[in-house]
Amino acid sequence: MRRRGAVIVWGKPNRGTIGVNRVDVVPPSSVQSPPPFWKILLAVVSFALAVLIWVSGLISSLTRPSVAPTLSLQQQELTFLAEPSVPTQLRQILVSDDPRGVLLEALQDSPSAQRTSRQELLLVLLEPEPNAEVPVLDDANRNDPLLNRLRCEALGGSQLACLDPAVADAAAARLTISVFLPLISVLAGSGLLLLRLWILFRGEQKPWPALQGPALSVLDMVLLVAGGFVVISAAGVPLVAAPIVQALTQGLGSPRREALDVVINYSVMALPSLLILWRQLSALRVESCPRGGWLQWRLQPPFSALMRALGGWLMVTPVVMLTGWLLVQLVGDPGGSNPLLELVLNSRDGIALALLAFTAVVLAPLFEEVIFRGALLPVLAKRFGVTWGIVLSGLLFGLAHISIGELAPLTVLGVGLAMLRISSGRLLPCVLMHALWNGITFINLLLL
Image 1 (cartoon, rainbow, N blue to C red):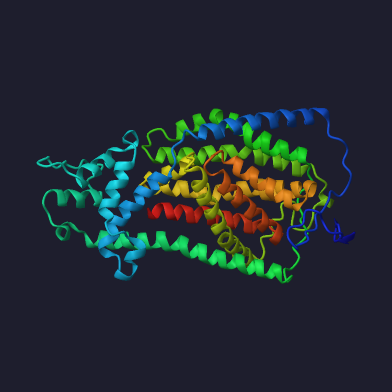
Image 2 (cartoon, rainbow, N blue to C red; image 1 turned 120 degrees about the vertical axis):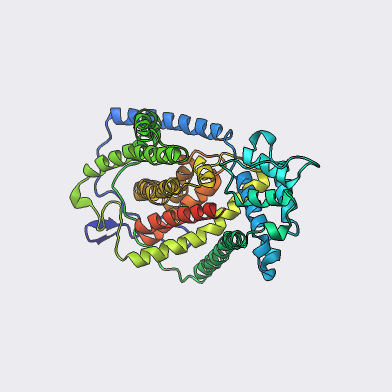
């Protein structure tokens, strides 16, 4: 073995190596004494409770509706509005031959018990009964461009007279971005993946840096993730956050009340794990800390971190999308979508959307990357090898979201974030990549 600064790095090949890349894993600086019995017992109880909470949560997520039908309907509405302004050369890609008929069929196929009052109104206006009275729009729907256009046509106006060119142009721009942004991302990401595979095949891949992280044990990680992230948060968030939310949201209307509820609940949920991790890191010997700190933030240089984050996001995008597509083909839509997606889709309030964006793009990446890639991944890789460390940390990341429908795609995303952490030797690119992933997803939802 050889010594780098104050950190001992093993020089022989690691059994956890991925592909042709050898990843040095920095072991603990000294042999630690056996943990006390109370700590082992607490970890066992925390692990058992966490498994129970996760299993029950995954099962109950099956009862949550999938966001896929709502997304499909939003896409069809946007297509119908945009159709008059879509350029001729893009019509075959962006719109069908009969966008009105496709929208009507999508509404008719949706379960009647799950239709909103607006969707029922759309059905009436898209397929009016003979001699039926055209409904009057209430205050909630008076400024809805799609309902106004359909009502104008139902009253006998021509399609040209009822068309609002500004609305059609804006819808066409949104439709173009919503279609081509994922397409360009998949093509660019697939190209980068093929290039990376070619470099591996030629044996030109540079060795990854030594994997450094906190000198903690798997037992510490059980207490951190199972005890703090799952058990304390599951029990503490309803007790602590509920009175805070009630006090702060008193007098607020929907959707601002729900958005502020998301921010407060997520912040309270993050506190136990962060406090446990802070206490664990404070107990470590300062002289054993590697250069760059226990979590290896390594903020400088920021531009290279951003470029690595962008490359990681591009490469993981086609794999995650392929995983989601295969899941639907094999078992159908499993449902259980994240309720935050539904909140974003149904919100038209700027302040509510800003609060939801802050949670998704700032709070979630910071907190989750500190726990899963800053602390958990290095400990698992040190104990089980790099390959298993990446897989296990990715699986736990997917399970932590307690959504059966998103488990497989989020596990793949977690694996991609773990590989970025190991290949870069830094935590900052992971936070930026996570924020980029959530941000692009948020933008796509807003476009619809």
